[in-house]
Length: 600
Image: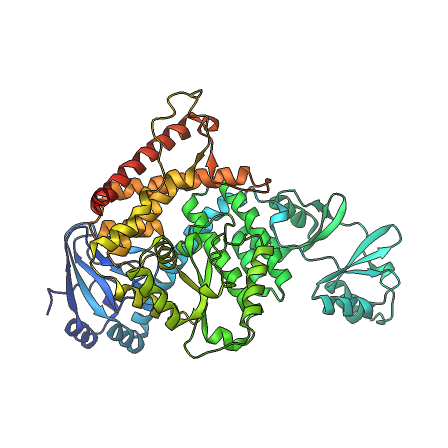
C-alpha cells in the first residue's frame, strides 16, 4: 500500500470507513522527476491523480494554467470528458496517488455526497475553461459591430394582407415578425402582436394587417456598435430592431441573437453553421469569420487564441459542408481530413485548401468524383482558394482507400524524393473533421510503425528547414535601404520553425500536430531545453501576429501574400522582428547540427 492517504481532504472526507478501505486498497503510486510529463496533451486518463508531495503544473502553449500541490487532484476532464489540450508536468520531484477510474466511479455511485462533490469539481473545471475563453473574447466584443451579428432576413407583407397571411408568412419563413408595406411607409407586426390581436382581442383572422402594424420603426445602421443596439432595445423595451445599410433595410436583429453575440460571439457563427440547410447558408456563415478575426485582432487578442477559435469554426464549416454534399453511406465509410496549416490549427485567414479523403477498404461510391468536385468548388466559393499543388479531395491522389494511403505512406518513407517529403509533411499534420476518424488513426498508426531510426531519412526530411534564407541585422535604422525591402515572413521565419519542429517531432514519433504544442512536447522529452522552447513559441506567435496584421491590412487586395515591410513597422516591432529572425537562424543551426545536414 502507498504512503498514508489523507482522507481529511475534500471530497474524500465524505467517504465512509468501508469506502476509505476500498479506496486505500485500490491506490497505486506514481513517481515523477522534475520536468517530466505526468499526463501528456490529449492523453486519455485511466486514473485520478492526487498529489502526495511535490508540485504539478498544468500547461497550455507553454504558459502555466494551474498548479497542484499536496492534496490537490487532477484531471477530471481527461478522466470523464474529452482530454483537454493541456499537459501536466512535474515542476519538482513529485509523488502522486493514482486512483483507478472504475473505483472512483463506483464510490461516486455508492456515496451520493461524494459523487456530488466529484461532479461539482468536474463542472467547475469546465466552467473555468469556458470563462477563460469567454473573457478574452468579450474584451474584443466591446468593439464589435452590428454587421458581425446574425441578422434575420426581412419578411414583407402588404398592408392589405390578412392576419392569416402574416401568420403563414412567419411560419413559412421561420420568422418571428413581418414588415408591413403601406405605400411609402413600412411598419412591423410581431408574433406577439398576432397572438394578442387574435386570441386576446378576438379579431378575425381575415382582418387586414395595415392598420395594426407599428410604423415608428426603431432602426440602427449596420456599422453601429452592438452595445448601442442593446441600449436601444433596453430603452424602448423591444426584442428586435430594424437594421439598415445605406439607408435600406438589411434585416432584423433579434434580442436573443444580440445577447448571444455579446456573450460569446463565435457561438453566433457556430450556430449559423449548425443550422445551415444549404451551401448558401454555409457560405454566409463562413464569410462572418473574417469579421470575427478582425475584431479579435484589433482589440489585442493573442494570435494563439484566435487560431484556436478559427480552427474550431473552420472545421465546423468543413464538416457541415461535407454533410450537405455527401450521402450518409459515404459519411459512414470515409474520413475527411484537413492538412497543412489547417491541420495544425494555425490557419487564420483563409488560405489554400489542403484536404483529403480516406475511404474504407472495399467501399465504392459511384458518384464520388462529382461529390468531391462539389466540395472543392463550394470551398472556393466560401473564400478558400484551390491548392496550387492540387492537394484537395477533388484530386483522386488525395481521395482513395485506406490501403492506397498506406501504400503511399510506404513510398513516401522509402522513396523520399522532394514530392514524397512534401506529401509526408502535409499528411503528418492531418486532422480528421468528418466521417470515421478511426480511418485516420489507422493510417497514422501505420505511418508511425513504418518509421525507422534511419538517420538518413530524417536528414532528408529535415533539410527543407534550410531551404529559404533568413536575413538578420538588416534594420539598424528606419531608413536602412535593405530594411525597406519587403520580406516573405513565411519563408524567412515561420516555415523554418514549423518544419524544423515538425522534423524533430516526427523523429520522436509524436502525435501532436500544432507547432507550439510540438515545441512544448519536445521540451517535455528534453529534445529542446525549456528556455529555447519558450523563445521559439514566442517567436512563432509574434511572426504569426505580424503575418496576420499584414494580411488584414491587405485584405482589400485581390492577392494576399506573406510579405511584411520592416520600414513600415514601429521601432519596437522592428526590433522584435529582427530578434525573431536571429533566433530562427540559431534554430536552423540547431536543426542542421541535430540532423547532420552539413554532412550531406
